[in-house]
Image (cartoon, rainbow, N blue to C red; front, side, top):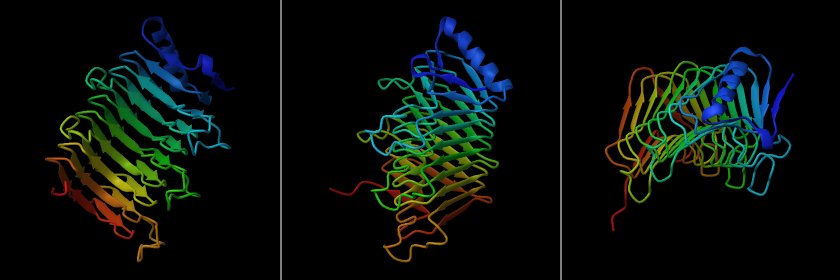
Length: 320
């Protein structure tokens, strides 16, 4: 038996009476072994909603028509879970599988207010198993936009963007292009914690496993975000990829005490510029932010195989 939410009646959780729908979905996902197929499950204006996905699947888009450009309609901007204008949401992914095939279709998207990121905040995502997979362009595994104090905890399971059969070795390969594993976009005081057997793998061109993005006009506007890794693995394969990338965001804190981050391909080491696996693919890159810190200790392991790829790359402004 499948449960299907059509576009005009998709899973949508809002305030008031719609809180009952939230509780119903929680029960379905927590206790049922039936797969859940949804166009998109929306949580809108529903503070304090608790969802646990312990089995089943949510799939958006068409595997035969992947969103490699904005003109492909199936699955376009159809996120598996969309949390809009809400605070104190708790979403737990245990053994369920989220898959998106569309253009700009995220596995999980948290979206707050673009004028004030503090208005909708304190949302939590906990992933201990299962998987999040996206195939299209601009399709992130997990993205938090304009929402402060987001907490993302990965202790198991996997996030994969792009396609192992179509690695982004040039900018013309669109599978997983610009599709980060986790992206924090213009928020403050958010944290990503990675441990255990959790894994993030990105295959696309110019893609980061973890991307913290601030404001290009003023790096102090979105700041004080952190990434902590005590276990698990991060792998990037394509051209111009990054393990962890902080961009125009002040006071980013990166702490590695265990686990591994690898960019490039051991079987295709970048001995020349003609080998594109992992070329210019840095493990950690801090770009035009202030007062950020990197602490590497314990059993943490960082490896680069690509041409021009650094383990740690800190870049400021050019003079003049």
